[in-house]
Image 1 (cartoon, rainbow, N blue to C red):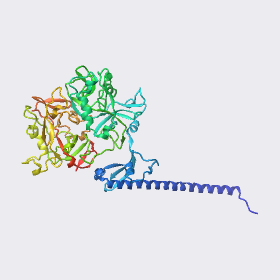
Image 2: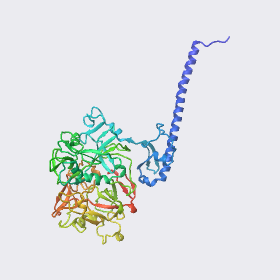
Image 3: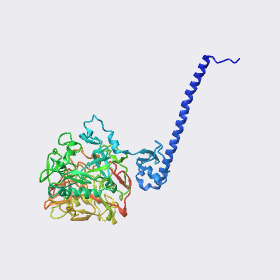
Image 4: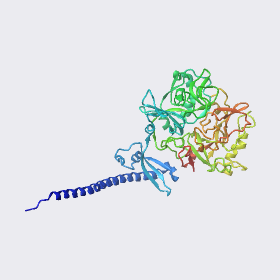
Length: 572
């Protein structure tokens, strides 16, 4: 007769089988996990191989990768649309279909190989929402009357991460609407300095005809890339009396900050020293009296008025749909950024920064021998772009012997400073055909038109363009982009709205000359408060050269950079 298992034996068998299961199950799980991981890696490698082939075929669009450590982004949808990967390919990270946020980040390594990484662009609004906490009393707050609207309040220390680099400009985010999926922005820097109108408006029609409105919605708006224009919404701007800002409203693409928005951002009732305060004078959109317009002053709270005959800074306000960001932490030196970048001077956007090699020995542009310029305008018809130095030359100069006539290339500021900035001192002939290379290599620059007309009280910003000269170098013309205090001329060594490390010679002068006279005895200059003031031509002021770089049929190529103040494009 067969002997049965005893209870002890059965228990022993069960224990042995349990131990075997404990050993086997993790092994099986590891095998499954390893198989899934291998499958994912194979899928990623296929995408990376497709990105590599796409890069080889389109390398001219990603030329900044010539520099070690630089990165570029290839949209996965571009790989699909160009048939480098199959349309049915899923994202190996989540097995979902690819969308316009999925990109392959390509980086050039120190050994000159490329590494690839599949990442997802982030919605800016989603990123900003991570800053919100119900207990916040400063920083990102929720509107009391509309739970979909969030806004910023506090000083620059308390509101440090709402900086956005977008469309060639540095913006501060004022508020965003999670339901409408929109953000309201103000330019971090004054974009120009002009008189707002010939007389204060008291109707919408009069505001629409004002100099400042036409500058914002004609000059500034038309300077933006079409992709940026298409993302700017019509918005209602309050331009009524400062005690009742919505007394008059107007619907525009671009406008000005109103008094209510300014005070809402402040640490006190006037908004003085909030993140919107930049120690610079700039116009608000509201009337103050029948002869004055509201101004945010550099030394005073909001409740002060500026004569309509004065020329203070202009900071644009726009509303845009949410954008996808690729990098940055929202701080002054690391703005949130979208994924647009130029490869040459044809593609560059107004407002972007370009490093131009400098051959001079006067240390005009620092130890790196690169002068950082900012794009003022694009002259497509004449194959050139106008750029202005992001700072000043290392010496001051008188403007001219007198102001009886418009400035010429024979006047003091040319013979003392500007000509020698472009041409090597001691050259017997300044023509490129004979001497070629100057302090700024002539292969980069071309002659251009400079507006030298008078800018008197009561004039439109277009008046200074009425009289012009042709030259190799000039000064900012009143009314142009960056013909104000965008570089921060404040007397303090600590700059409030720019990174001091990006300014050429930041402490040389608190004033700089423009091309334009004011009256028969005075010349227009930009002062440390950001307004256009006047000086005798014999005074020594800072010099901010403006030149034209070649584009169009003589396109100049960038070897790297991102067009920002911290990472300017690098001319080859």
